[in-house]
Length: 461
Image (cartoon, rainbow, N blue to C red; front, side, top):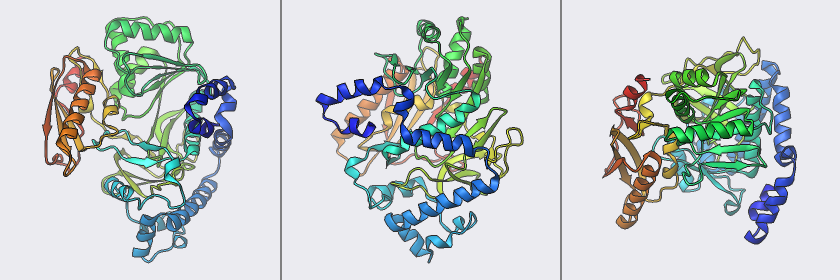
């Protein structure tokens, strides 16, 4: 049905969407969703041996497909004198090299890492959030969204979520003209993640109460900023949430503490990525991240503890031994003793820093995931970096693509400056600087946002 709606001409798309919206939510989720969801609800209690057997079968299918249909992986295998049958266990997978983001980007651009047995014209493009300054583009299959949503709902079920429960979303692109969007078919209300004053905070709380919200889902930074406003203005919360569902960002201890304190309920978090290579979530009895083995195979670089992931969902442009650049805290190959699921490996979190937040001239926090939206579809810019020197001034560093049209480049820089002002506030001064390259930190890492004011701001609370 979704495919039919997407392909339909405009003049019949609207009535189709209307009729589609009249269907019960459970029906609209479709067979792919329910088959995946029911499988996960059952297999979460499988033995370690049975889960590993399932992983090896999925890995075997993925490697055969990649070798046969994806030129990049055919070359990787051939250069090492390997065939898919040579990968007999998880240790054998280490015979294949890491796939870095730059390697994927280069091979995607020349179509070497895209499956040959698909028609690209019929597939949507997706991209990463761009928190590293360089969003990654890749193709997605229609069924991927249904499978992904099934995995998300499965892990949320640990805190009582059922598909179709009333949910508030504090996430997504910023639209200040329409700060509140109600999707009746999905039973959600989406709030703009920018809450710049007391009046909007009060409005959001009123809408949540009227709606009968059961869950609040969104960026940790945006929800924490909301909680800080509620605390600052001593606003009343006249409803009770079942849980708050963090997603899309690294979580900081202060965020969890302020949110749980203000909303008086459990914060539940998961870790994943747009590339669909890894999904890990807390359980109902701990704050430890459990990797879902049905989703893929997770490793960690032995030196840096970076996440290395092989995903089972995305087969159009496979990610095999993909180096995420995120650093896992205390990763270990064991399962959780509290919930008794054989989901492993587990880890305590992902490394992040307070300096990733932007502070507006009015003193409000803006989370990195909110800042990323204008940067997702850049055409003339290779790399960017944001440096906040004060609450009044931000440096926007830009590295252009080679031989780019200067007029188009200037238009894109102007667009970024205008969009950043919409997000952060018109009072902020954006100073663009064109660079040949952006240097790495002393540790060799790239920081997309460098704020010289956010740590002091947070410490004041």
